[in-house]
Amino acid sequence: MLIVDAVVSPAGTGVVYVGTTARLSYALGEEREMPTALATTNKKGVPVVSILVGAVIGSLAFGPFKSWSALVSVITGATAIMYAFAPVSLAALHKVDGGRPRSYRVPMPALVLPAAFCSANLIIYWGGFETSWKLACAMGAGLALFALGAWRNGTGAQHTIRNAFWIGPWFGGQVLIGWLGRYGNGSRNLLPNWVDIVVVIVFALVIFYWAVRLTLTKEGRPRQSQRTRSRSTT
Image (cartoon, rainbow, N blue to C red):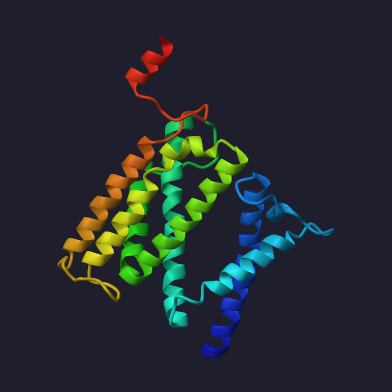
């Protein structure tokens, strides 16, 4: 029964992610951040090109990993990275547009949002150094392609790069802590037990509040210092 579930469950998840990944690349193509061919659909509205590109990239993802369990570890870390952006985004929205009427409000956001970001960072750390550096390389390549597409098509997204500047140090710090830590092949085991947990939490909090501070204004412009604002007014 477990073997049957081990086949059926990933297959079901794979079907979901095929559709999700295709729609994400479709949106990037539609916004001209990536080649517009990704936004083409057939007569039934299916983004065929995006599905094929996702299938090719997904197949290539098997290359750097020695086993299925190693790939699962990377997928878990990638999911944690994806979820780590959520508390930062919500904190930024609270800062920029906190007065907007809405049916649900997160209780104690000043406590819950940083805690959620710290939890995601701990999951990434526990995934091990071998996982974190590969994820950082993959994310770095994706960000480079995104920036290149935005620059070539003149979408203006490159002007907001300052507000995403925290992502680079965040990935780099995670890789460094993983290298100094106790998990995964290649780690140096230099951080003692529990000390490494404190280091991850402190690092995550620094990155979280820095990221929220770099939030865009309500008009969609980067925040300026008081000196810059007065100079521009003059």
